[in-house]
Image (cartoon, rainbow, N blue to C red):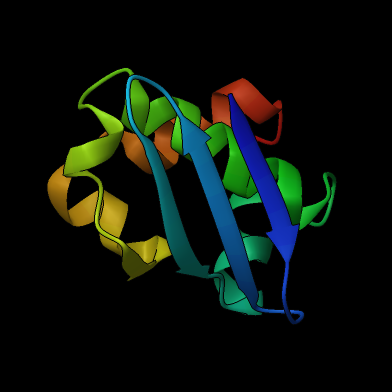
Length: 90
């Protein structure tokens, strides 16, 4: 289960309940949100789908506890293309 809670317009708390429950603080810059979604989906959806992407590749206990969403593409170069495809914003 992934639960996204908006803290501010750019800060989100994400609760991931898998084998162990983890909490993550994620920053989403408006320009990056626009780049990935074109404003077509809520930012919370982008965060949730990004965590689904991460969980397909690593356990929640391996996901950084605090990070900016742009960091994902450093570890997974296919992230931006994949997330845009999943959100239908390509």
